[in-house]
View 1: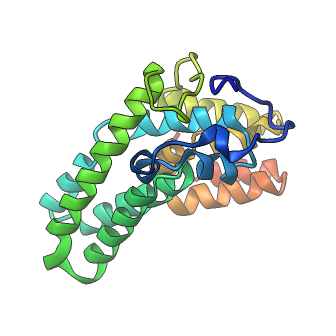
View 2: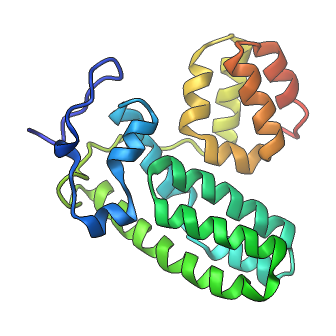
Length: 216
């Protein structure tokens, strides 16, 4: 079976054997689990991996900088956002380490540095594997045809979302799915949650209202 072949979201996901990788690789990113989370849509999953690699190009550095600056609120928010993003792509160890760091920031400051160090190690492994995926040199089971179109920069991404909402275009749902990590940084967790809920309810006017509460 050709692991580089994409299937549409309407086609049935092939047996897990086609996605098998060695246990050490699966411990970094469990691609089969990530694809299962989005109902077998390999193309969307490939875009999610590329977006994750772009959004987290600097790894754990922003969290470390926030902690060094004494901004525990920002550090906790970044760890929380990372936890969700890592879970969505099947990076379970990174998800777990982000969860531990988030808890340490909130309840146990003396444990923050050790938790951050663990997170940095897991992050390095995920980013290294994603670099292999993007270049097509990943281990068996991780070969995906990555999208070649450039990722949208923040102003363009936000403008595109506004355009889709004005047009009451259901493609806004896909944009939120694909670019949730970037939009979370732009809008914040609470505001993005309101926009997402409204879009999923096809309340495009309500989504625009929530979106316009930000400084565009």
